[in-house]
Image (cartoon, rainbow over all chains, first blue to last red; front, side, top):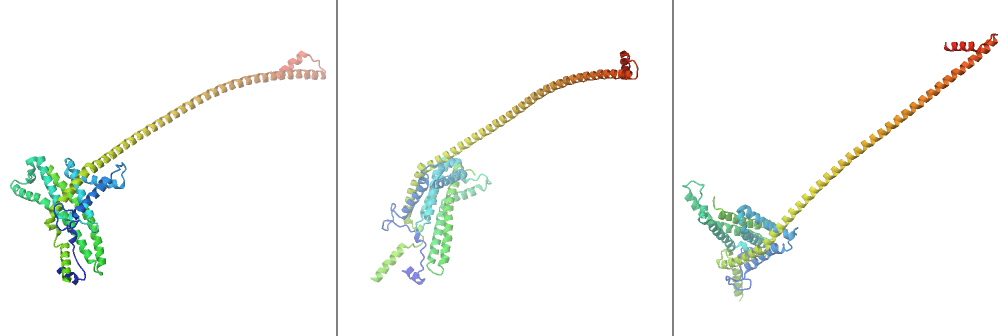
Length: 252
Length: 180
C-alpha cells in the first residue's frame, strides 16, 4: 500500500528493478519445492536448446567446408579447447568437455537473459555458487587424486623465506577457500547489476521529458551488457582453467 | 468491498514485486541448484557424446584434407619443375643438333665450293693455255704472211727498180730487216 501511494505521488514512476529476478512457479501455486517447474527451469531448458542448436544442429552436416552455423560451433570449440590447452596444460585436455559445458551454459544463459522479458539464470547466486562449488570440488578432488598429499604444496610457498612460509600458508589457504565466493559473486554480480541498471533506466522512460535520455542510456547499457555477457562467461571459464592448472601442477 | 479489493491487489503486488534481492531468498535455492545440475548433466552429455566428438572429427578431417591437398600441390609443383627441366633439356639438345647440322651443311657446301672452284680454275687454265696457243699460232701465221708479203713486195720493188731479184737474196734481206 505504501509503495502504491509513493508511486502515485511520483506520477506513475515506479521502480521494480529486482522483479525480473523473481523465481516463480510456471504452472500456478506459490510454493517452490525442489522439483517445481519454475521460470528457472524454462530458461535453463532454453539454454540447453540453444546449446544443442549451436553445437549439434549447426554441425549436423559435418562439412569439410563449414556452413555459417557450423563455423560458429567450431569457433566455440577451438576457442575453449585452445584456452584449456594454453592455460591448464596439455594434460588438462581430458577436462575439456567439462569446461566446455560450463562455458556453453554460462554464455547461453547470459545471452538469453539479454532478451526482453526473459529470466537470467546466471543472475542468481544459487546458480553461480552451484557452478563455482562444482569447480571448487572438482579441482580439489582432482588435485588430491593426481598429487596425493603433495597437493598441499600449493599452500607451502617453497620459494619464500622459511620464516614467512607458515604465514603465507595461512593466506594461501584462505585465498583458496575464497575462490568459489569470488568466482560466483563476480558472475552473478555483473549480470544482475547490468540488468537492474537497465530496469532503472526503463523506469525513468515513463517520464516524457527524460525518456529520450533514458532510451539512449538503455541502448548504451544494453551494448555494454552484450560485452559483459560474453566476458563474464570467458572470465569464469579461464579462472576454471587456472584453478585446474593449480590442481594438476600444484608446485609454485 | 472496495477497500478489500485494493487490499488484496496491494497484497498481490507486494507478493509479485521483490522485497530486497530475490537472489537472497534461500527458499528457492534448492530448486535452482537442482535444475542447474539437471541442465549441466544434459549439456555435458550432449556435448561429450555428440557435439564435441563430431566437431573434433570434422576438424581432423579438414586438417587431413588440407595436408593431402598441400602434398598433392607439392607433387604437382615438382612435376611441373621436372617438365620444365625436360623442356629446357630438349630445347638445348635441339639447339645443339641444329648447330651441328648447320656446321655440317657449311662444311659440305665449302667442300663443294672448293671443288667447283678448283674445277673452274683448271678449266680456265686449260682454256687460257689453248687460247695462248691459238694466239701464238695466229701470231706465227701473221709473221709468215708478213714475210711472204715483204718478200713479194721487195721482189716487185727490186724488179721495178731494174734489178734482178733473186728469191734467196730477197728472202735473206727481208729476214735481216725483220729481225732488225
